[in-house]
Length: 504
Ligand SMILES: *[C@@H]1O[C@H](CO)[C@@H](O)[C@H](O)[C@H]1NC(C)=O
Ligand SMILES: *[C@@H]1O[C@H](CO)[C@@H](O)[C@H](O)[C@H]1NC(C)=O
Ligand SMILES: *[C@@H]1O[C@H](CO)[C@@H](O)[C@H](O)[C@H]1NC(C)=O
Image (tube, rainbow, N blue to C red; front, top):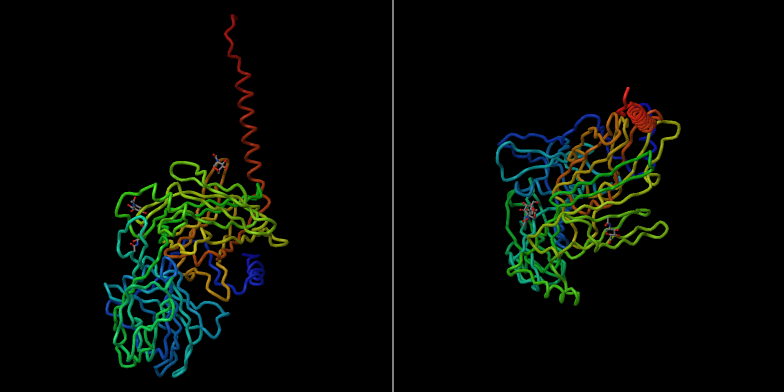
């Protein structure tokens, strides 16, 4: 604790702003506010103007909402309810809310709420940093991804066919509050949008399109009851895989003794794209591959690795995969690991594998001067960098610290724009010990678990601070020495026992 304030201050200098520092000393589960079954948010706000952007360029939907909100009550208000249809709620990834005018001040505190009974809507509660006075306005910038929200239509295609996805949403944003005016802009990956719902919600054509952007609205919805929906479905070409990691386990192992940071990641991937109608044809695939025709199968994954990464490996269920290529970065550049799965992964297919590499610990670890405290700054999430993006249903990050490391704290680094991670209350943390060869106490392991994130979080950073003394550092060599000594002593004792059979 003693040096923790120093560390925290030092850190705040390093990063743009500091998120709340979470103690990992005890298991902290993500906090959820319980709401009664008949809960309806108090109508203390109104949305004066709302603009939603839906981005469909990747294998998941990403939405950003800019909304001018006004306190419609007689008293100052702090809690703004953000509603989602119940079937979307668990698939909201990396939700972040900022005060648009003070984006650099970082994200606002957002808590997940749970309505006790089955309900059409579920809520997140946005806590405004200061109570908003009656009739005052502020602009919220809300961003999130919706995982598993894109469906291939048709669901099955020929190997050489182009793939189309469909996305459904409501032309009226399902807000808990009265919304005076609103519009939604949908950005498609290309101009090929064969099907989309047209509406009569405004005079003139709706939606209007310009290139690959379609705009629904603006609508005057002052008289429309909050929660009114108007279903819209769009279908568009997406000739890329829909890459889903149903689970990613990421281990970062710190070795003070070896001066090494070892990273190992285990992926369970699935392609949520169109399935194949017919059996896979290797001949057709070879031809298509040769002609570089776009495909909805995963043929290669590109993984930029931090400067100085060495000894990469790529192993799947069968064994070492030789079709990987590693180009280390020169000087301080990132390296590139391009790896090809053993077979192209078509829609409906799975592929699981393991990847790993080493880095020099000194690039990531700093000792707090004059203290037995260390600051480790590592990427929270890396993962392949693909233009079609990747959605992660479950992520488990384990930071394996040396034996004896204690007083472990962690925080995620926040900048002036979204880091793709959810707020601190939606990341679960726990501490445990992990025993390996020649460990006496076992290593301290910080485990962070989160659900529903996307590769938007690729560049997020994790800072872990811990105390670790010289005595702890000596524990391992001493244990090994004692171990070796007892082994020698045993051998000596055994070899000195006279087992020869002699005549006395
Ligand atoms: C995509 O695949 C994952 C993993 O198998 C599954 O959990 C998810 O429901 C699928 N999404 C859709 C939209 O079918
Ligand atoms: C695994 O494959 C890579 C790439 O071809 C090769 O460099 C490496 O030596 C192989 N490792 C083992 C253990 O076979
Ligand atoms: C793919 O993996 C998921 C779990 O991640 C499993 O439920 C599903 O059965 C697997 N599909 C196939 C075709 O093996």
